[in-house]
Image 1 (cartoon, rainbow, N blue to C red):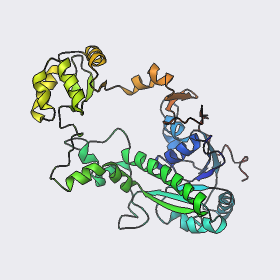
Image 2: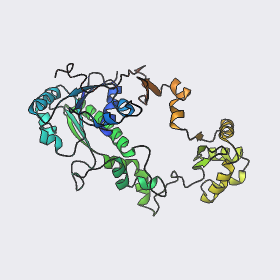
Image 3: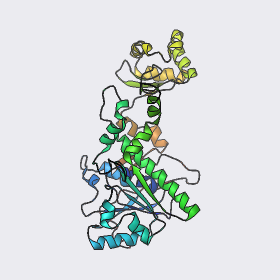
Length: 351
């Protein structure tokens, strides 16, 4: 396993921090989920008497209960921190310091610790103490403005997921730095900044033009969603000229080749797509290859046999989950274990 031998103490709850440590756990790191007596709030979200959200974010981890508000809990945590490589937390700025387990406290017992704080707006600045969730960060960053003419609630927590990814590769960067220089690091990951990084191209465009929509925002005929005859939706991503020409040839409309980026062509295409059902369009794409895929329902994705063969979808305790998304030549197979019960490993982690 690529990260075998690394010990991670994860104090975070809900989505950003747990998703970050999930990546590390999947790659072999020992992730110890340090929970309060009441546990991660995500444990409360049930669906048909199962807990798929917690299960998907916390597989491959251990769980211990520590009451960090008590001196005994603090003492046990600092004892664990002595042998840890990484600490992840997601509380408001200053919270860990007030408990006596902040970066400065941990650094006294482990100078090489990599301590990552994932918060809404970071450790400094005018917004540092503001409460918030994914929807708030996505709204304030301008991300929601790009999703539809009228802002909508995204089906995915984009800002949270983005911050988890930023935190994970920042931690790995800090590990490389430690290997080279023998020093630890404090990493400040604002979820808001992570959301901004996802719309970097749009920010850049807005600085040179009044519009914020790029050619990838659904304003051009070659890169858009359309409805079929059987009321399914499909995606056309013919950005490159060769794919657009291939598409135009497939529908016998060479006259549209020059209208690849002409917004006035969109109504015509909507009519054209409504003339065939999904299967007909799929067969046409198989023949002409013009960057085309159906908009699948989530249950269709979960049951897709091709994805199962690709090992993109795994099942743990009857709950389907997405496997670690990258493949490594050095590791033939990653191991997956169910999410831990609250406090399941209290007797097995020197606590």
